[in-house]
Image 1 (tube, rainbow, N blue to C red):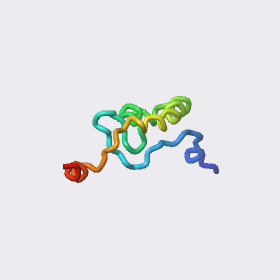
Image 2: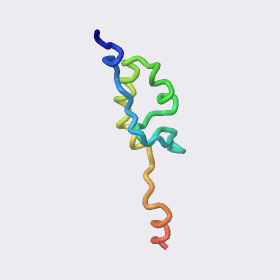
Image 3: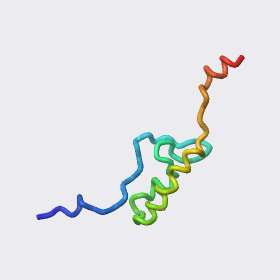
Image 4: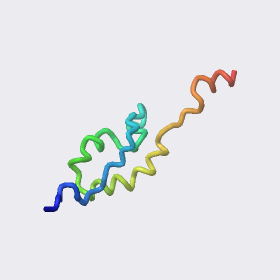
Length: 77
């Protein structure tokens, strides 16, 4: 008996288990998906998932990187 349930041909989630939504960009800082994309991922077709996957690398630039936080500000004084 073959177990076809575990051999599905679908695009896996890009989640890396760093689930923090950037407050301004409104995307996850781990996988770069929007909240809606994360919520709907399991319902999407492979085509929809593939389209999102191609967009993810470009989304990283939308996140503003902190440059040292409080300690960096104190050093500038």
